[in-house]
Amino acid sequence: MQELVRSILEQVGLSTVLDIGITALLIYWLFSLIRGTQAVRLVVGVSILIFVYFFAQWAGLRVLSQVLESGAVVGLFALVVVFQPELRRALDRIGRMGSFAWLHTGVELRAIERVADEVAKAAAGLSRDGYGALMVIERETGLEQVAETGVMIRGEVSADLLRTIFARGTSLHDGAVILREDQVLAAGALLPLAETTLHTERYGTRHRAALGITESTDAIVIVVSEENGQISLVERARIVRNLNEAQLARAIRALLDPSAGRGAFGGRGSGAAGPGGRAPRLAELGRLVGRGPTRRADDDTAAAAAAQVQR
Image (tube, rainbow, N blue to C red; front, side, top):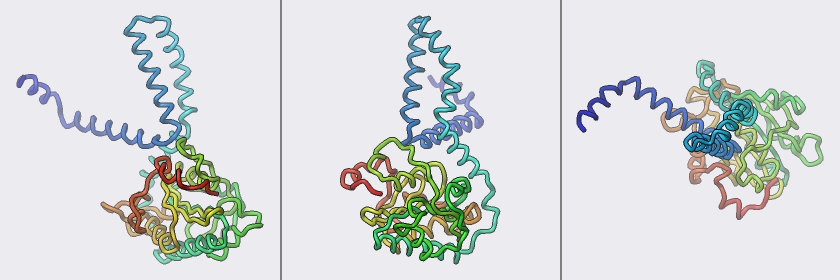
């Protein structure tokens, strides 16, 4: 037994350990990427087909094996189409990691504080007036294509401008506002709806659009419910609900603070330093604003039972 263990240890070198570690991290990253999306059920389906194929090989079922082998050729191309949203999201994340955004000069902290204060003030005012709103703050992932679906404004961010855009009866109040750096880039923009399959039916159009854009980008989205005036903050398909003006401003500043050296606005600012100097995830912002850790939208089943569908 000792000789067997010794022979195994002799064959395991540093490169082997490194190879296994990187592969394990890659698999974990891929599973975390598809968690809560339609791809989960598709992966289960593909896994079942692979199991059936190996069973057919073991049992000597030649016809079934040949059918599955023939279908695998077409299936490879089908998987590229079926998993297109997940592949796009993965490439986007890889591009952000290798973007050298940390070498660029950050946006001034005063500009970030002003944007956070103006957006929070506008959200609080819209909530009091009973108006719905959808405000998207661009970070490293560019939103130019999304902005082009609306009306380009390129005006200075202010609470008065945002409240005017979302006032009931205006032509742009139903779309989303795109904020880039300290400017209102566009208004009336159309956002993709959420791809998550679990419990999305409890969300209204604005909340599903907020989840949709944060699934595929690193944008921060502020949602004001037209039905009950509740203010929510969405980032990476996670939601912090029922924020007041001070909590919202503090959370936005934490996500856009340039002190950590990462991109905040369009890749030139940063996220606030969390544990280990990294930008905080929204799961940590629950503690920042005096709440418990937040959960993914598809895990929030208890809140779904108590909340009405929001718009």
